[in-house]
Every structure is written in structure tokens, then in C-alpha cells.
Length: 129
Length: 284
Image (cartoon, rainbow over all chains, first blue to last red; front, top):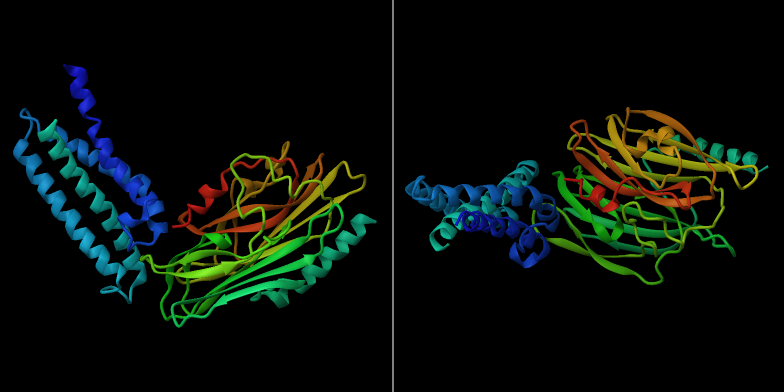
């Protein structure tokens, strides 16, 4: 059923919703300045949707299931690493003397976090749906 | 007569300008003062003053002085003080960053509390302020608040605010005045001054009516060069009063540096081009 397959693509919206939820529910990333989250959620949502969609489609038997799994694992690893780095940055554990770099890195890590989660969600969805 | 007294008023204000280059003081009587002295990185002060008292059919002209002082030895990014209508991309090290808009309408009857966020973490200062009763922002394309309408007070108003980049600072001043002979047809005058040494792109989201947007390029955005003052004239065939207008300031790469609020004369039933909230979100 073609329409069912197409409907399954909507799983990517779940990954895209996470940055929005982070912006609206502050306890999801309680260590970050809410202004940064408010600014970044729209573009990050878009990137997370793309990332989830790519992994989901790659995971089909006709594509590259192994590549999809590797992408998902790399995404998960990136997400976990980003979270720890964000906590360390917010606690001023490094780059304290370079606030401009600290700010730019925080924004990059925020995007990487949700793109990574998105790719993992895409692979899990492909296995479950 | 009205035109003559208004011109004198504008002249007096302008003659004071050079001496005030680095200051941002509110004239009038202070009715509230709140401050937070912290070691580093920031300290803050919020002062509410009455510039002209309310009269039977005219709301008071208030001035709200907000100063955030970066006392640390490094720039502080992402300064967000929503309860005070104040957003800055960056405040340079060991410098104050002030804003003193004159706004029409009553202040709140009791202080409001809210956080002042800074940097990348959720660390913040808890602050108290006495903001305008009608708030700092207006909804997109909405008619202006009835709280401010009807008044025809032709005092010239002035709003001053500081804007920092990582390596430079500037002070922007917005003067606004209005004159009328018959209280039906109004001539509006706006002067925008850049007292610093960096060019900036400014959008002033004031309510407009008729073809005012053709006379006022700053409604959709314009460049103001360092150490210059530009004057704009427009006309309105409906009553005007002092209204809040959100100002967005961008750098040479069109990146948001600051969002603030100024008081300007504008048609009481004018409509805004943009959403104030979206302008505040452009500072990053």
C-alpha cells in the first residue's frame, strides 16, 4: 500500500517536534539560556526532520540498511557527546575566556544534538513500522 | 503658536545633545528604582520616571531607564531581559549599556518580576521592574492600545539607547515631534542619530497610516552611518500621539545586535508592518 508507506514518512515529524518541545518546556534542557533555544528551534527542527527522513529511507532493504544503522549509531553517539559538552560549556568548564567561541559552539552542539537524535529516531522507526 | 513652542522645545533638546553623548538619563521625577549589584559579570538598574504628569484627557509621558553594566573582563553574549523590553546580542567588557525611552501611558501600579538571562547557560538574575501598563510590545498589525489613544500632547519625545558589537559601541537617538494648526492635519518629524563609529541598519516598527511608509524608510529598514543625524518628515490626517515602537538594530552582516522600545509620534489608529515579538527574536 503506497499511501501507508508515505504516511510512515511522517515519523520524521516526531524528530522535528523535539526542538520545539525543548523551547516550550524548559526542563528538557534546563542548563541552556532559553533565548538560545528559542532562536534555534526552527532551523534545528528542519534539520532533524531531514536527518530522520534520510536514515528512515536508507534503512529499507532496497537501500543500505547497514549504512542506516551506522548513521543511527553515529547520531546517537553525537547526541550523547553533544549533551555532555553542552553541560560542560554551560558550567564554564572550558572556553571561559572566549565567550564568542563558547556561544558559537553551543549553537552548533544544540543543532548536532537534535540532528543526531533525529537520525536515531529514523532508524528505530524503520525497524518498528 | 503650537508650532512655535514645539520648535523651541526641539531646539532646547537638541542643544543638550552633545553634552549627553555618553549619558542616558531620564528627565522628570523618579517614581521607582530597582537595582541588582552583582560581582560579575553583570549588574543592572531599572528606573521609572514621570516626564510629564497625566492631565484630564492626556496620559502621562513616562521614561524607563534600563542599564546593564558588564563589569567582567570579557564580552557577555545573549543578554535577554524580556520583562524590561531589552535584548542585546552582546555587551562589551567593563561597559554599561543603557536605554532610556520616553513612552506615553501609565506605568504598572506594582512592580513585576522577571529574569535577566545572559551567556549560554540558564544562569540568570531575578529582577524587579515597573514597566508600562500596556506592556513593551504590540501585536502584529493590530490597532494601537486605546489606553494611549485620543491624546494630542505635542511634547517632543526622545529615546536613547546603546548598542554594542564585539569591538565597538554606538549610541542611537530617536527624536520625534508633531505639529498641527487645526488638530485635523498633523505634520510629523523624526530624527535618528547615530553617535557611534559603526554603521547600523535600523528598523523602527511604528504604526503608520496612509502613505507614511513612503516618507519613512526606517519602517522597513535603513542604514544610518556613523556620527550622522537623518531627518524624516511625514503627514497624517488623523490624530497622533506618542506610541511605543520596537526598534531592531542589525550589524553590517544583517545580524541582530539589539531590540529595544522607543516612543515616537504616530497615528493613533495606525497599523504596524511587523510583529514586535518577531523583531525581538531577531537578536542573536
